Amino acid sequence: MTVSGRLHMPSLGGATAWLNSEPLDPAGLRGRVVLVDFWTLTCINWLRTEPYVRAWSRAYRDDGLVVIGVHTPEFSFEHDIDLVRRAIEDRAIDYPVALDNDYEVWDAFANQYWPALYFVDAEGIIRDEHFGEGRYEQSERSIQRLLGVERELVSVEGLGVEAEADWDHLRTPETYLGSGRGERLASAEDLHLNQWALTGEWTIGRENVALDQAGGSIAYRFHARDAHIVLSAGAREPIPFRVLLDGEAPGPSHGVDVDEDGSGVLRDGRLYQLVRQPDAVRERTLQITFLEPGAEAYVFTFG
Image (cartoon, rainbow, N blue to C red; front, side):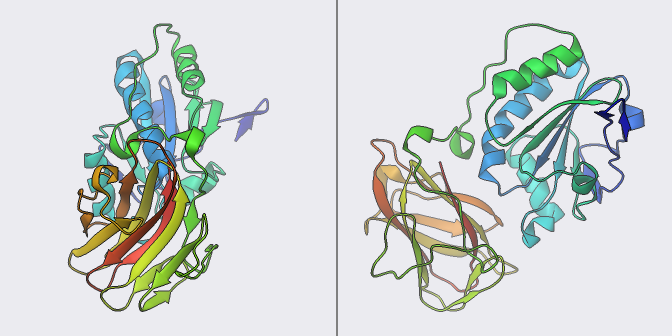
């Protein structure tokens, strides 16, 4: 609905469930400034913005700001409400979250991105929007302007997977593995920068590759400080895995989900950080080997 060319906040009635709150609607939010944040739990771009959204919610709550997270799943396993609950707990999210498993809220906003921020004034009109990472100062100033307050910006430092990417050295793009959007699949014997390869018995599905027999590996040649992969174990028990970097244990270059020896365990469907290089960033070959069948791999992301 538009008034004088300005878009009113659409309905949230299409949400399939609510966490941290009773159902909310635009009419009941009149008089409050609202920040709507579209996210999905495996998205590295959302994970790196979440420290800011969390900080704004806490800093401006008493000034009248309501932050609403809208979880719209990218992958089929992200429809699981227990995984969303776990993500909310892991990220210490205490603001309302609408589950949008049917994409009805996403469509009502005509949204196309994770993350996406919509800044709504006290009259229910969308005054600003931003898609993706960055622009944090301008976004916080938008919040202040809508609230009618002016003060020093909050101090935010992302830790672990929430840390800002090393953009100056990031030369490897997000890479999907399933047949629907997969690209740059190559041979393990001749792997070039930004290519990946499978070893062992795998089934390539539309949105993932799934391991049929224990001992299968995925290798990726990348140039970035951080390397992540989105994994799910399906309905299986936890699946141990081993990460090698240039054929050796990662040592101090291990990510938060791997120890120095390269050992990790796939339990929940989520994003796993495999590598964080502490020193000079250079081209490396990552290999992740699963010791049991059933691992499902969806996308590599880098930072």
